[in-house]
Length: 214
Image 1 (cartoon, helix red, strand yellow):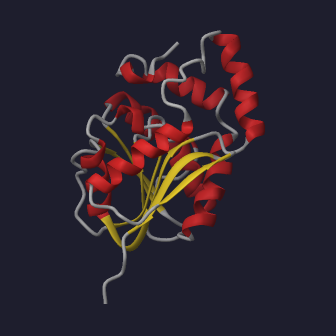
Image 2: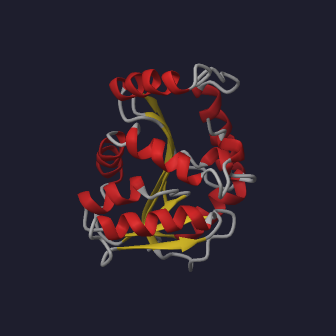
């Protein structure tokens, strides 16, 4: 079973298979929650740490956004490219090799930044949040964190994953309330003082906007 802390080029295919076969139903649910909260359905969306592109694909299917799938692993982007073609979304989606700590995009260029499950990989989260804020366009929003969309989906996935690996989900070193507290501290360190911490059945997320300056 994959350890998120050590996922690399060799483990991407296994991770993508789990995301497709077990996690698949959660992505449209999460997309609905993102669009309800952020109210952004046009412009450019950046999915950070996209792996095989499941969340970004679901976002493109549900909105009119142009979606960029970014990951630091080339094998992940090969899988994502194939998924874009499979879904017929080549006109509105592309992939980008890049790291959240130095996003290879100009400032003020992205209306919506999303990421599910990539935060544990970030080595310097304050720097990562600063980069996300930099690329956000004025009025743009970020929705970053992790979760399963609903308690029903969380319980379903837990059952299936424990069948694969009985130790799955037993790491309680950082319970949800502590994770959000740590993320809030790191965002304040990044200079982002206004944000919303979401901690409910949908998961644990941080949502913030870049203000429009008149």
